[in-house]
Length: 260
Length: 296
Image 1: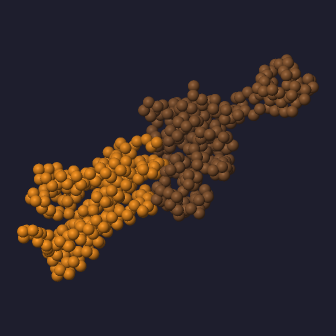
Image 2: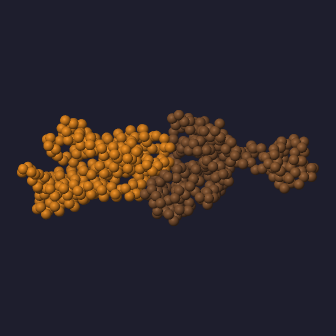
Image 3: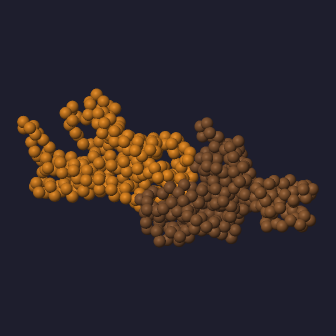
């Protein structure tokens, strides 16, 4: 427990956390702005566009906005781990706690808590945007029905698990730039392809973002028909497994290496 | 009491045998200088001792146990390693508090330690703005957080100005001689630690070349007697008759080997030569050090 507190202290005594929080909220805000602005607007040639602000479907999709920012908590998790190597503070950390796997465990727990916090922050921002716009449109605000609680839970869980995932990845790669660039390429290139192409969706649903999508169960029609997703419990397990497998491999390899 | 014990320690990095069968020990209440040129294997030895590097062979024990087996390591051992190991965006106080939390020490120790190393005025400043000397002081504050009985320092004088070095000497001597702490301090400059250390361990190319007290080191050398006399030549036969070997490095200067200053004085008196200087040369530690660590 002392180690977890120490890890949280490490995070909250530098500027990184609130910079990431602001960036994450800005990105979520942008998503929300898009959803609200284009809600109910018909597509070209009379095709159905985004659902109108008074509908439940609008609320369902708006509440998922926070999950789109999971790349930022992932980067936060990566930096929580790799900055120790970058600034060589890992030496001091390991001198205080020579059993290195305990350091990795403490970071995972701290990351989980921080991820929860970021998820809740994203939900608060969403609430501040969605509730007024629904009311103004004359709709009925749904908070406890229409699958909204599950979506909220999914957003918070995604945020927490992506932070874990980032820490596991950071422990494995150690090099900050390599880890961040790798994560971004993975999310924006590899995963987008896997998720979009139907033939690859059987693989895509097992990627972190595929698993995360099953948590919020948002039915995105990418033009290729219904996305093939895992059940949400399996999605959560897949994300946890990614984080733990990375952390475990890291504990057995890179974390064990000599500090010179 | 033996605080640090290193036995037959070896470590290879790729083709380089960084530490090769090194053994020495450090007693409580003493300051031991761990000396050698850059790249001799000092840092690797200390990293093995602190569990940061896994040795290929041999043992390195602190208080009789490997570092990783210590229950509360920071309360037993303090270490000052590279001066750069701080997050630049964190303040000095926060840096220490993070460690206090991890080590189970009260947060109040952070300010006490800053006071002790003369950084109380900069406690709330980010480390990014610290000079190398301030970082060294902060590193020393970090090392002493848990009131350890063993202190290990790697090149702590790097980046300190002369006043800082003088302060460091006093700090280490007080800890060792008054509080009974075992201090192991590495350096590549003998003169830096010469006035502080009780014992020296000298390493070159990964191998131990000398271990003992500072006196033993200086005692090993021949200490000739230097005589300045205008009529120096007249002394030579008298000295050689007494079994001395005489060098004449310059006009009017003799270096007399193999006999004491008293015998030289007697020769001067017997020959009635006017002498302007007669002194037993001090052996040059730096020269002995260079001789011991020279590439062979």
